[in-house]
Image (tube, rainbow, N blue to C red; front, side):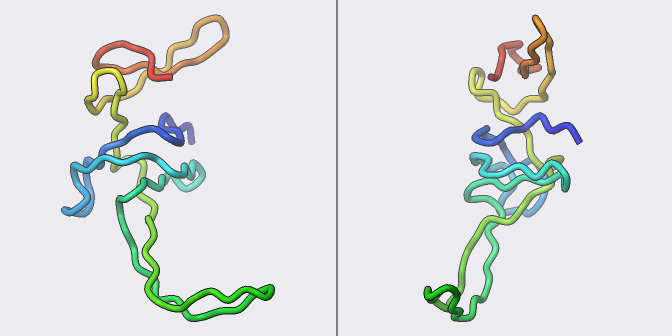
Length: 109
């Protein structure tokens, strides 16, 4: 699956959980095979962790918070130039492809 969102892009959540909808964050990880992305500070999950010991190190027990993955269709890219959510077009020039904002027409990369 071709993904038009990359790591370190700013995205806005457009659908999903009520407390996350409308929030913006930076993309930490893109999982193109699964069609999902991980966004900093969005979709926070809690995991109850037992104390474990591996290779001489001890991991503490307790409740660990981490960002869960979101479906790519639930977020929209925020254009760094016009600061609005936008769809993305791919334009090819001289054998190179670049992402272009559909609102303002400026290159995103």
